[in-house]
Image 1 (cartoon, rainbow, N blue to C red):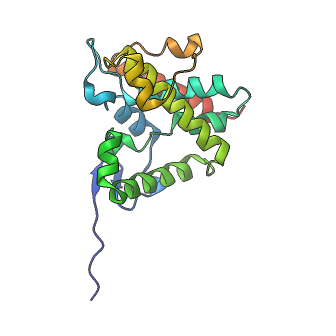
Image 2: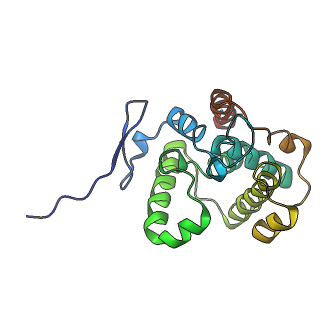
Image 3: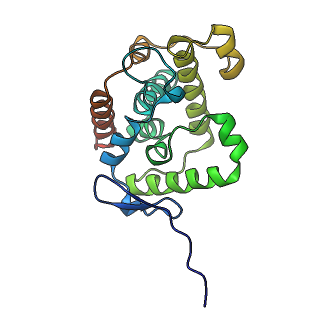
Length: 198
């Protein structure tokens, strides 16, 4: 008799029962992603002000920076930018040094969730140019957040994330932390716009 495969069920607010070890695309809902990301704090919540800077806001910032770096991207390619951290709606924003220490066990969960998210929303696997764009936009967003919100000096942020290139005013305007409900709503509205057929 074979052993039963381990499960790690998470009950989502939509009513879905998501298995984090073997996620099904049918159990992925954008409303759950928006709700979760708006409540996951970047920088472990160690930012000034009455509101945290959420992963939902970070995603919007990365999408805006990526669109500025590479004009002419399709809505689907911009959706890749917006959803690049989507698995964190259930596994949280684990800082990079900790991810590296955990190793493949964490990365495997993240990759399986991202694969289910891609399948659910019809996102193809990104090509090398898209991967590079996401990484560059993500680093630029992190540099802005670090210096504007998390107390880093410019030199400290550059040592970790690389030197900052000027971001468009539209991106700069996204740095101010919002109330949770606003972050959730704006993320969801942006997803709906990018996912719509142009």
